Image 1 (cartoon, one colour):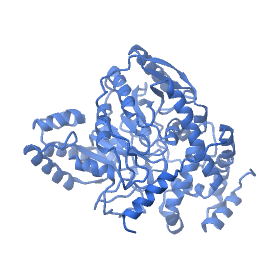
Image 2 (cartoon, helix red, strand yellow):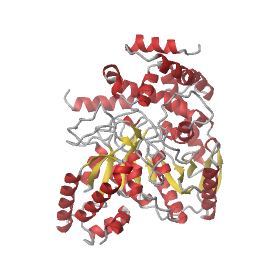
Image 3 (tube, one colour):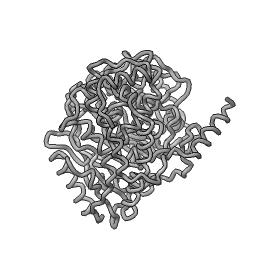
Image 4 (cartoon, one colour):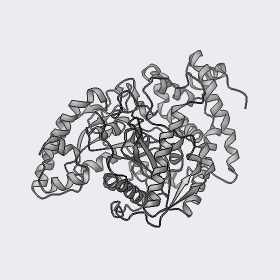
Length: 469
Length: 72
């Protein structure tokens, strides 16, 4: 089978081919490694490529599948993970200079579960330094590029995770999301990003940004792939004290259920200040839901207007608490933008922190009220298309009307504050050929409904144009 | 809340964290982060009376149990 054809399979399709022995894990892994070699000098999606380990894992998968020992949908599937997740004996940098030589002695639970399911690790993916930013313009490991336009950002912080999925240099990836770091790159690169409910996926072995808002989740080409991956990584973990004992359902079970008679609420506070292209695409998606038999109306969650502030205050304090020692000893080893953010954390008072945490309960309360009469809520994932790479340092221009970071974060940060599941799905491309996206948001631990609605929309929307790279 | 100045920011960082922020960076932060943090007072307008921060005793107990299970 030709390499290009193999690279086009989604997880569900590749799984069938592998199980039927029409494709071998070794040849598909080699195809992905060749694709990385061909694209990553430009893309900078990877920090570390684990070619030898990948081939070894692929040979093992091939032998097991040949012997009839089937581990499930990720057996022999080539994946890559954000370099924020610990991997035993494999460099885990957090995208930083500070951890450039760090080799953990245990695995992040999310990766451990994928590995146990037979996944093949292609490598560790580039990101915004320590996951603290949305551009993935990493001063230590290279600026990650947007596959649809190499002079634009891919979003972040999981920029490499989304860029690799879209470029076909990984089939599926893991990212993390504290202010939008799964959904933003998924939106700007044109793929699916699922931030699960807080505590649904263990944070153990993930370099923290914020203890109370870090989420781990999948970035994939299709909704079904996100459902499959979540099914592997979700579930209770005694190593994470916040981990939930909520049972893990079969997330693929309702993917064909459709949205007929469902009620979909459009969040008023997240439906303004949109670029013309985003607005047009989002409204077309809402019409599509109507055509599929859903009722679409508006809901109001007033406290979401304060979400960027609440999210920012909590992260400032949490992040500095983790980084304080390095900030004292090695401040020059941080990139300038991350160092400035950590310095800002020095100004956060205890009063501000506790008040922000209290505000989160108000926000979730209002969101649950809105969901009492709706199955899901929707909003754009970003007000704008992927902006050009500027290298601009945070705060250097002061508060201004045009602030790309704010125009992106204010749509995603509310759901990190509330911990609700939120899935970013492409709604098309702009006239300039850049991906556009919306979020589908559910009740805590109701990823199944979110995935079901997303799958119905994805089927109606049809395929997106491929990126140039 | 009094307006944050670059010098105030430098003093806070120095006294609380033994950390030196450059004068230029401190002035930039005063214009942006200072304003942002001053706005946290506005959060009261969300009606926070009776709302507790969601840190939660169950999480405290679970974390303690996890640590106890490790032996030390």
